[in-house]
Length: 411
Image (cartoon, rainbow, N blue to C red; front, side, top):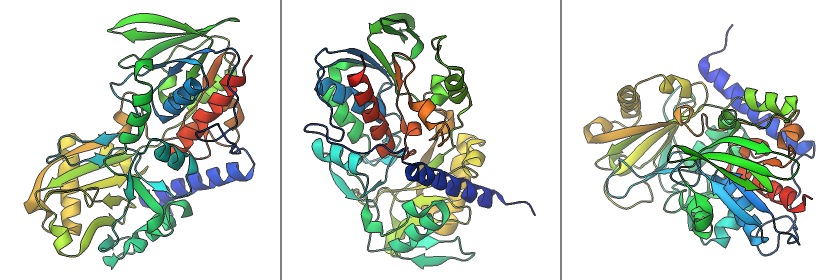
């Protein structure tokens, strides 16, 4: 008997969790050590400062740029977008009244030490991820059930791996939006970041490395001692790479698959569900999470959003924007009756459509981890796909710090 789409999606998420667990058990995870004054890794300042070009201003590239600068190196960051953060991105439009919702990274568990260290270092405010005084809706048992917040996280743990379960109070989010986190790095690296500067070619020889990027549509070249590729492999494979890269590294870059995530957002003129004692959080038969990201934000209006992983995310991606909104409105009105009458507008985010991501997250796997992570000459690599904490901000930060150590200690 063939498996349903939901069963396949749950199998995929469990497999991801097991991969991460296997890698950690194998001892591949980087052992934290102190880095002076800031996060982890004991790294001494270099006696000979290096010129380093970082491709990508996501969190992996930003933490690497920040720490390399702290160690005395000369850093330049090239970012294709007009903003920092990559998949740590907050949507503020087209919402009213200053409301916002997360397009990417949102949750922070209490054991993600690197993430919490930098949040504390930069005085980025936190608040609870989940409301505690109202009920969530669970439909995954075949019938509608009202549960406390622990019932919601229990559903996550049962479907996506135990790391997403546990006491809901162990989860926090950034007050004001996740994008405040990469912006905190950017404020400290402002003169080192070049936006709207997509890298199209990377070169190297025995003495230097070079990145060719577009500026105003025209190619420009910047030389350095080392280049750090902090790009998803899904976009790095569109960059022309040095011919002396190993065949296996090229094969990993070309074939690494990224998971699909789709989110749909609906703005309502009132948070009528709260009057019924509902939090706006729910878990569906299709293993789709529903969040109310505005529960801690001021104003009468509210946003309900869906968070669909592989299996359901592709179905949403196949629809036109208007169809995504209308089908989600029908779905959520069945869970929160009255939404249609209060609906004001919506939008969606499909990460497979994002030009500079082409997917939500990935992991190279235990077999390819060492090869994928190691430098190719003067070219280094970082990103959540190169960490046991793939799909998390923690993974991007950890891989970025590994690259810092590698570059700082390079001859």
